[in-house]
Image (cartoon, helix red, strand yellow):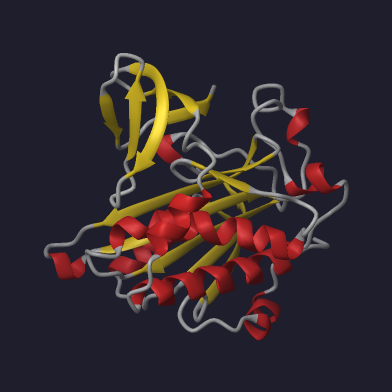
Length: 260
């Protein structure tokens, strides 16, 4: 594979303090999320990072499957052991780090964040984020697994079901993009933001100011209800505040949000 995620090369290039200190790559696995979760239960240190060329049971938010040809995407999961205060910021940290990493490797692109953590280029989704909390017998035993999937070198237009809604870095740039460079940039951006948050830095304000939804009309769809309104603001927990046409303020904690 021309764009192989070579373990020794990635380790040599990384300059992170925590994330990626223990880096492992798999050619095929069921799910990097499950791999990191298992390692976390077995006591693996914070920062363990596992990537794969192919996942046979990859998943995104709401247990949706994550589609990707072998070796064409960046599929990565990271073990984090934050305190309870930091937990709500993990999704925000990932959402901030990915556009910064993409801009480093593909400066001609302009990635944006759509609430809560979809990364868009030209209005189409290029990346998904899934943060899962794994709880043990006590609060001290819990940890988080941050999963990120970036479409890198494949033509999402070739699959009719996702052609209009999804894109890839190669589709946007017109050429192949190095997964090694993207991975190293991503882990470095994640590490800097995570250390910043752990030391008391304000990640929420950075995430809030980066959201493309705020101040625009949105359609919100969930398992129980669907409605439209104006996206007014976000709460520190990450919830979206939407003003409906009858003047009510509704707080959305999870769901699909599309711009109108």
